[in-house]
Image 1: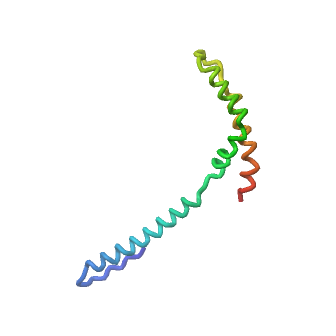
Image 2: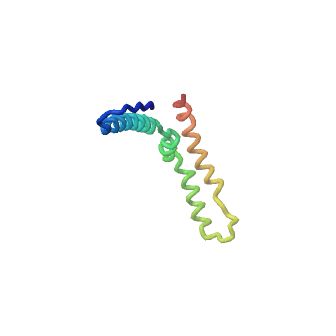
Image 3: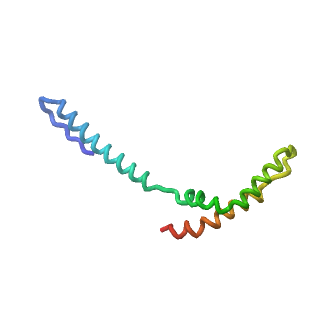
Length: 103
């Protein structure tokens, strides 16, 4: 922004002009930022949520495993396999839909 300062008997006019230029540039910057934020949309998260109901069996298997090992104090038991089975099911559902939408 180029500011040209001219001496005049009414200095408050210079300040008002400077402030109006500043506010208009700030307003346009904020509107561009708001548009960029509105355009950003995480399709993967949306598709994952829509695919989770199709993967009920792996989710139930994972939840049963978590309940089964809940009292294990040794730390040797885990449900990693069931966890990854659930997310494999979700990813298998999401993959074709997601890559069809990517540009």
